[in-house]
Image (cartoon, rainbow, N blue to C red; front, side):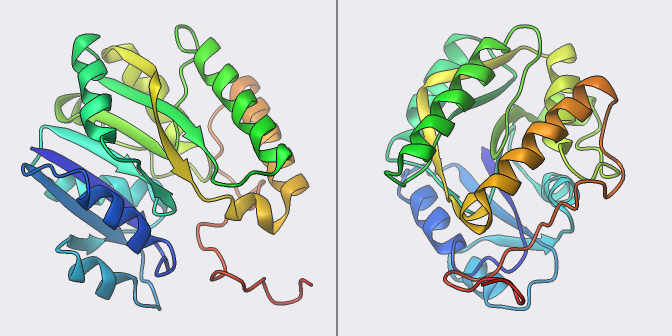
Length: 239
């Protein structure tokens, strides 16, 4: 069985898109678990309407861990709530996953926006993640891992404020075989960048440098925010 695990917080605008894309994969031996961090909107109601199992979550790392605790599958697929996957995603992903005998993997990310800045960002993301696959592995937003390996590394480090997925991949790749798949991709919402492109790019660049030179980010130095404003609504005080 495959267990899809999604951490959420007020994701009523994006969660239905992801859940529909997962359901369209047509896999019978699959469960979807939503680990919710106390949403005040219809997130939990929507999750249940799609037949998802719902459990209490927290920040993304904790949410993934809580989902994994009740999961029945031998393979976990951790997806962010604002992602969605194209038709035959699982079929293509697992074909390469098994062919290469991988234990943990990430894949290409695409942003459904034609602006040039997003195309450039995609290319840089793909180049960096692929070029570091062997010696400095990365994966984010969409991580596939075998249950035994998730348990072996103790899950995600819940004390990390930003980049817990980076630390998770680093630990997992030391105990299992990691691969970055380039023949399959998922889509991610550009909402983070749309809020403030310059700030987001700077934040992620500096956080990468921090994690590389200093270590895991366990303080609020980068002021990471799990929750996002609803579609079409900017934060109070911003114009």
